[in-house]
Amino acid sequence: MSVVKRRTLLVTGMAEGLGADIATTFAQGGYDVLGLSRIGSGSERIGASVARAGGSYTHLACDLTNATDVQRALQPIGGTIDVLIHNAQVLMIRPFGEISPQAFEEVWRVACFGAMLSAQAVLPHMAARRSGTMIFSGATAGLRGGANFAAFASAKFALRGLAQALAREFGPMGVHVAHVVIDGLIDAPKTDQRFGAATTGRMDAKAIAQAYLQLTAQPPSAWTQEMDLRPFAEKF
Image (cartoon, rainbow, N blue to C red):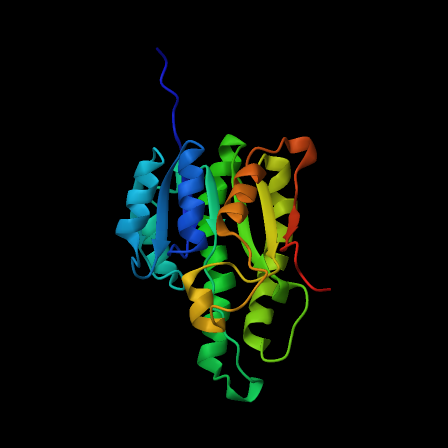
């Protein structure tokens, strides 16, 4: 009896919430999971959930804004990654006059610079074997800047530009690069903490994760380069 080889997913910014649901959903779809973040918040619970779904989970402690740290963590495994999902971000909602230069730079470094560093560790290997998928988690702020979102919006705009450039450079090499605009509040504990439990019209993290998994199965002749996800109850 032949044994089906499991593929490998790397998720940056791994934490409970969307990251954890991505990990579980992909494990159900035949992937082992590597989770990368500065601290292993909830890694034991995430690992247990991935194991129940049939996969293995490994947490990589890494500062995504530090080039040396990212190289240390990803250089040994860059050639094993089939799918990279950049999910790391810092959601800063603050009046412009109250944003320090250090805080502004940190938001950009996590969202965009971290994406560049992780992509550089993985994309050459994907291009060499002419297969692989890279997904960037975007946001409404990457399409239009709102009041008090100067740091977050500028970082997400930059991330979207990076995704578009990589899609055009690496698409002909067999690598699918997609940017996903998440236009809404995700139903997760962090959302309760930031906005209160009474907010309605939330997005199901499992449904978002399923959409990500579907992106990896698209044929090259009809790749999605940008996808917009929003709740059906949104008020236009």
